[in-house]
Length: 89
Image 1: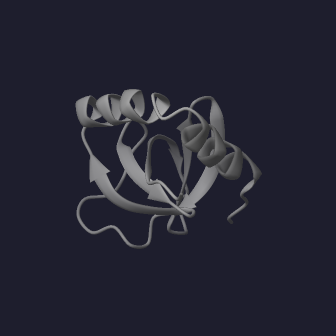
Image 2 (image 1 turned 90 degrees about the vertical axis):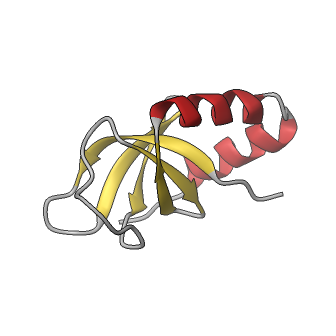
């Protein structure tokens, strides 16, 4: 199963459509080129799938979604493991 998981932006690249996000203590670069709207900033939340930020979400929605996903057990753990092993940038 592939899930889209909320991640918190911790850093935005100044010259490329990349941001470092944190999901459950795992930090990785994700491509933000699919997003429209105002520039991203540290503290913003995005929904991530296969290394791409798909949409912005608010913090309450992000935390509720993370709680729901954590309840999935193995599927969530598998997604976090895949995120941990990914490399973009």
